[in-house]
Image (cartoon, rainbow, N blue to C red; front, side):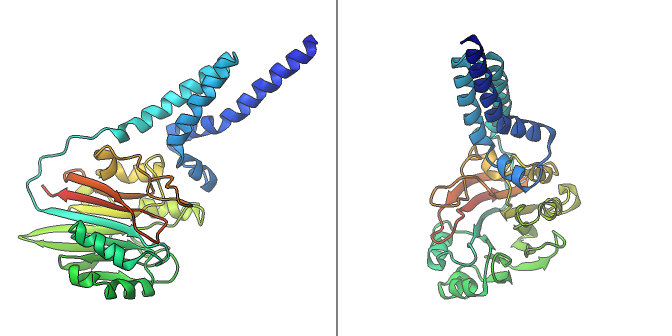
Length: 316
């Protein structure tokens, strides 16, 4: 009987250790700043959920008197919570008295998003610059019929089949540029002339998904932008296929950028889903840290598996 009891104890302890491996993996990867490979990258995207998982695991382990397992799980959960917590607190904004620009980025889900609904959103939010991802030729035609180019007459468009096409549409004149280098999917860039000598550089971000090519995704993330001292005021907005828990995205932020959602305390609002329930925030608006973020919203786009991200920014 004693032997059986010890065997059961070891089995239960072993089960807790096994259940704790995902928590340990996320905590280690997040701390050392390595995204792993695509399956670990996917796990890292779930970090806020892993915090909850870890707390529940710790509570159950402590309830069953697995003290060391419960203690380790609790410590790892607290560590991850420290990483996640800044996303729900708004930050002070820099002094800015320049022009205000409203930016919207929308993934069209292989061109299947409702064009009329998107144009309505543009008009309701009085959008000045719209970044379009996964824009197909058919989607471009639908947006034109829905009146998008009447509201935003200037454009840099690179439609393509599937997920490869992208574009920038603007209320202000655009001059196409290359701010990102080579990429698997089109990531157009342009300088928007805001008038009065003010210029804002725009990048429609859509690096390759890591499950389609991890090393290429990592390279394209690195290429998204140089340090802010090496160019003018810039906004990088779109579907990054990354969350704030990925080292690749934090590398871009370290060059002098701020994530609009995190700055406004909305960094946990999900923008992408595999079904009807949004899961993780893969879409972002990154702005030069000298730019003030006056508003941020996540908006539904019928027909898309992504929600659009909107930010109102004021230039210094």
